[in-house]
Image (cartoon, rainbow, N blue to C red; front, side):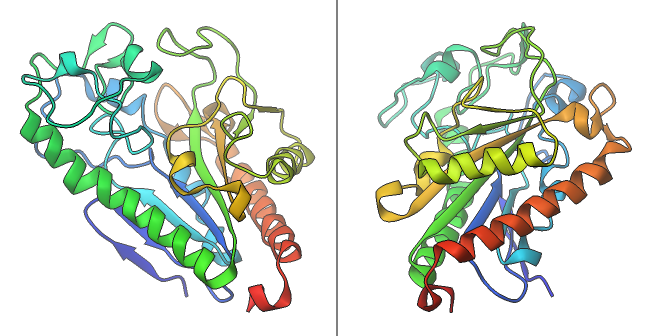
Length: 291
């Protein structure tokens, strides 16, 4: 039986049976809108930022010895895959009390706090207060980050290593807020922040395993990976993190935000991938590390 733990920010599904140092997380699959959200964006626009059903696609992970973590809150409320300092100061009604370091994401309106739901479609008709942003950090962002860190540290403590996969979906074509505006995207993108968050052998294995299932896969193009890859990785200490982006057209109607017939096929293929990953991870561990 899979053990599931829940809090306000996320769920954590523990390994069923044998435990392996495999942790998957889905930071953008949450869709429960907090009562204090206060956005003016239409619901359909908010859904465009939702990694719809990604946590369901990877529900097989605990059956193969891994831990699966999924957010309950939407990324449009606060984005767990951004650095806590990636704040657009112009969105606040007062100076932020701590350090901020806006990144390229904030410049495109997609930082820790979203300025736009879609190109030209604002999230708010006012500035956010420092207190409400701090609440979002304390009640949602930090608990999610702690759940991931705790799972990663537990894997390392038990097995001496970690293989982490950050799970996402992507529109079939980029929009004006994306670096690949208008481009047709591949089936999947595997990222490791340009080789800095994973052993190259792990990144290569993931990409080739997905290609072996018949998917067109690119590495670090157009995505290089978000901040969560840096949260738990240290390749020199056998802690590897990669990101997998799945093209939504493979499994859902992008306009209506509903699954189509491809969902079940993709789910079966991802289970095949996850079972192969578990086998590959066992081969990287000594008998003592497996126990």
